[in-house]
Length: 248
Length: 143
Image (cartoon, rainbow over all chains, first blue to last red; front, side):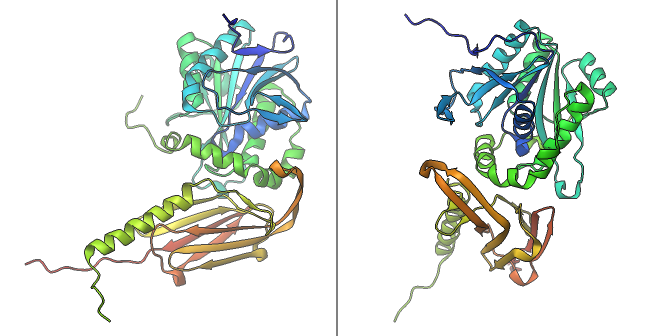
């Protein structure tokens, strides 16, 4: 009988990290661009990967080495989980449960999930605003004290919704940050706003200059990932553009 | 030569063919590049309202002067020169250097439009086109 392997595999021993940051391809690829830039500019080490039972049959090859598309990077302050491919709906629940369980075991003090929120008039917005959702009253107070406006009314869909739900159930501190973004185009400018918000609120000190300078190049190079992400999310994210029918 | 008059069923079949073609073109997974033409396909959105169709195209690395748009009643042909060529050192399965010089796409429209009344604006590398739909409503006599 084969030995049961853990679903989140650490290839390097992780010391206690204060923040765990999550990014998966979705609206405007905001989280993916922000965290991808964070990994390269902070020269973060690859420290592990994620195995899920319903992951798509895809491995990514980097410098000749095959890797899981869902990986962990870390340094002494924070650990990030990033996916290079859109994840199928069937993986959301398992990913949410495993991530929250693992974050608890590692003593992570706050999970921060990064995403975009579609702004219909995005071209008219010079500096996208970043909103926050807190899993608990304490996290909502923290977000307000660090300068974020809370998303007061709306919907959240996709993997973030299940991670948020899991954190509410387990009483684990989670902040979801949403930058105003193009809904169907990669939005590096929204990712810059996201990183500036993180820098200011959590002292991450990520230099955004290169991302600002190469924003147009990112928009060209990420077209295919954006298209695949759109196809995988089809129908699930459109509800985020609506308002709930009932009030709190 | 005798020719059968077009019936309402023929009209429905024609509409069905156009709808199928539209969905095939929009949702099929086509390559987003053409190595021979040195062109990349840009991302776009098509939104239809009762009165018009709004088409938004992401055109990074492009100046307004380099955009060429041709519109007819059923589709848009768009070509835009890149400000400078985009070079990939190891392109996909070919694993060789490739260079792209323009973005180009043909966008099928979900309804017939009045091409003479189409307007476009370009801001922050995003082209937005407003295309008024042809009005096909006719008054019918109720007996």
